[in-house]
View (cartoon, rainbow, N blue to C red):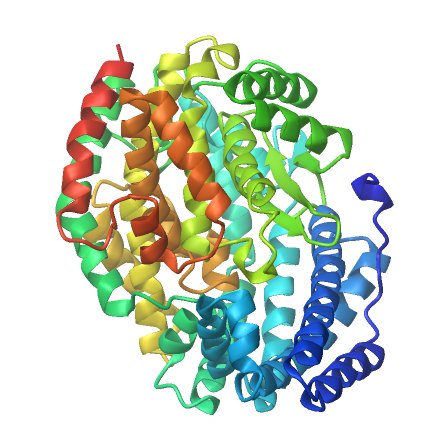
Amino acid sequence: MTKFEDFPLIMFNKNKIVNKLNYFIEKFNASTNEFEAYKIYKKYRNYMQKLSTDSSVIMIRFSLNTKDEEVKKANDLLTETMPFLQDCDQRFILGLLNSKYRPYIESKTGIYLFKMYENSIKTFNEKIIPNLIEEKQLTDRYDELIAGAKIAYKGGTYNIPQMAKFTQDKDREIRKSSSVALYSFLSSIENELADIYDKLVQTRTKMAHELGFKNYIELGYLKLGRLDYDANDVKKYREQIASVVTKIATRLNKERLERVQIKKPAYYDGSINFLEGNPVPNGDEKELVQKASVMYHSLAKETGEFFDFMVKNHLMDLSAREGKTSGGFMCYLPAYKCPFIFANFNHTSGDVDVLTHEFGHAFQTYMSSAIKVPEYQSPTLEACEIHSMSMEFFAYPYMKDFFDNPSHYYKSHLEGAIAFLPYGATVDEFQHYVYENPNATHQERCQKWLELEKKYTPYKINDGCDYLTKGQRWMLQSHIFQTPFYYIDYTLAQVVAFEFFIQDNKNHERAWKKYVKLCKMGGKYPFVELLNKAHLKSPFIDGTIKKIMKPLLAIDKKISK
């Protein structure tokens, strides 16, 4: 195993790759027996895993430095090649689905894989290749704009993640002045972001129509691999949030304002949780990583060994800096059998959340790496988020090593997770509106966002900030641009993670054992079935959220003491 910086940056050669894939397609279609067909199938999937690794290395390096010209060139070539690669993959899958040797291969891989294949062929046609290229170019441009932020404040220059330490400061004047600086920058790129998004909506709608769908909602759900629930199930789930969680979040927000002694809240007061300031972890990146190492060695043998592996091989890049894209993610590199964790430390409690959340993702890939069918190693996105969000809660007993006042962290984290559900529902319903009404203007979209804020988060304050009163908060949520309909997955996973947290408070060993079992199952089943196999409640069942909230609030009251 070599360190991440030694992983080669492979420039994609479209013609070479397409010719190689066409060779596999021809050989498979010319197979004379089931054993030969299965052998070629495995070689083909191994080659696809190599391409997946090479593309992930490019994506990670572009995220680390959007200004690196060599990496930008590699990313551009990747953007040009991926749709053609997808075209080849679809043709191979079509041959596989129609092959007389399908029953034999299916007996080796399992039926669910072929259900995934049947689903995937509905989402692609060579006619949409130009649209896919344009979509990738537009999302890359969004990333560059956000990553390229240079916000002048108090004699320094900061990017968006770095501004968080100011917008969350205990000093109200600092929160105000830093928020003014932040939203002033966002206003300066509003028109370009609005244009990018409108082009994305139009491009995605064209793809949906070309593939025979009524709108992009149907296509978006299939692209996310949602095989055992649909938009109607999600709508009913959102209504559970609106009827149950919004009331709770409103009450918790009122208590928060009383706690910080703010009688007339302003838009810049939404991120402060305690009068003495929000919990801030002790130590710089190196110290936090050392503390995380102690935590994971104490939590379980397998987590300790895996964290050592991540540190030794430089598989984490954690601090914010100029040119680095915002946010955080985990990306798995199958050819190297390792994940990579990307983050933007900004000296807030979010730094610790990254070390638990993204490590939860990474740990799942480690636990399921022995699964022989590559497509089963990782589940669909909403299930992936269960591993990460649950790990945040399993880390609670160790927060005393990270914070001077861990009870403040517990309260901020748990109540923040509860309040996140209405926000996540806002993002999701907004996207359904957008793709049901693709010709809506930018102003109409922003007005819809304001309507949904009143429905799900009526306690949010926008007055005093032109950017927010115009309903433009959504433009800072990268998922809306990059991965339509993904954001609700975080809320679905959060509900399941709450269940793990409740169980962990009753019996840690039993909860941890169930968690590890879930990680090891990877993506062998679709979301709802995976929950059933793991004996976890489905958020789609009416009443699930209400049942979970009662014991959760009891824990919140207990840990706040």
